[in-house]
Image (cartoon, rainbow, N blue to C red):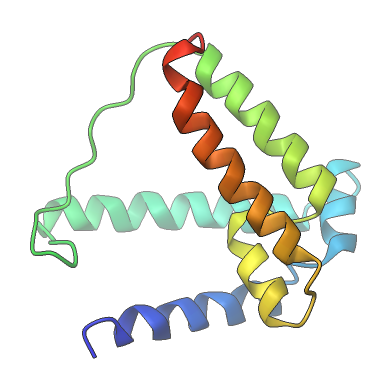
Amino acid sequence: MKYLKFLILGIAFGLVLIKAEVISWYRIYEMFRFQSFHMYGVIGSAVVTGMILLALAKKLKSKDMYGNFIHVPPKDKGWKRYLFGGIFFGLGWALTGACPGPMYILIGKGFTVFIVVMISAVFGTFFYGLVKDKLPH
């Protein structure tokens, strides 16, 4: 019962992404060809919403699910990590047609081929954890 609210929020998030056509391969194709503002509008709205919710969480001194105050540490200075991380993220998104959030939704909608994408993403995350100290940051 403790995690039921998170399950409900996850389902609501998935429904919003489906209704916004964010999981549509055609919309992603349009975005990477700079043919439509649709995906940029959705992403921009998500960034603004995140900024507002984070500011509210700080102001209201919100707590996480474990009862700890939500604290966002300051970002490290530098541009290489963000540039190369963004390039790899964009390449993965363009190659598979999905970023991490929509992968769950696509599997839930019956596109079982995305199980391979999910396993690959998890493997990539573990691999990054293994080699991150050896990479330039």
